Image (cartoon, rainbow, N blue to C red; front, top):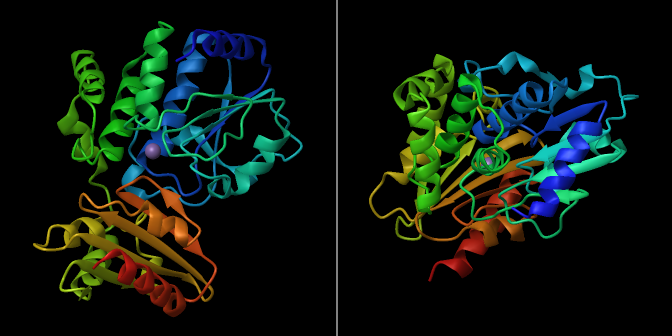
Length: 319
Ligand SMILES: [Mn+2]
């Protein structure tokens, strides 16, 4: 983290009269918890009020995270609000910002903190690190560098951001993130308690996800598992249908997992996972993006058409 950038950051926080923080649309664990952690950290270290905003839906499994009620749906905030300082976290690409974008665009000064591969930064100041395990990990590092105070809620939120984005360390690719977590555990974080706190899905969600997985197709000699969610089932899914992806990923011989979601008649969501096989190129070819082994897209087309395009891309990928 550049010292000069940190100096600007401190100055902007100290002089701002209004501050807001937001993550990507349909927040996941990292997006929600890093937003809440950063906002609360600014509150207790600078004695400032911070508005947390989101668009889309927050999965039920995240209902019990600390300070969950501190985040507000963007439409409940007066659009005339022009923030002096606006943080956008974990956003990936501009079209993931959703309804929060006008607040970002209107803000006097903007900061982005991200670990996605971003082509171009959109904020005035950026703390991006595509090697970081989660945005919470970047914020943990920032807090330590600046010697910001962290309370129990912040520690739990930063730990949750790391645990959810690394799949409880399965996708942790650097030693750094273990050292961060070791330090959080020394400070009182209870990983088992946090894991239990996330076991909070509605029954219909898990039943639906299991049913979707049970109907999956296995293509290219079983190397691609492809599951499809219709619009009725889509309402029951919590977040991105992570359970479907992880169930199918457990199958011997499966190298790629794809989940197609009929969000609307002409809008299809796609989640892709690769077992040591990059999938971000396929997601990008469909207008999406993400991480090397976990990527996705939202395509303005019917599920049938997106399925065909996807299979064509896999035909070229798998030989
Ligand atoms: Mn993230």
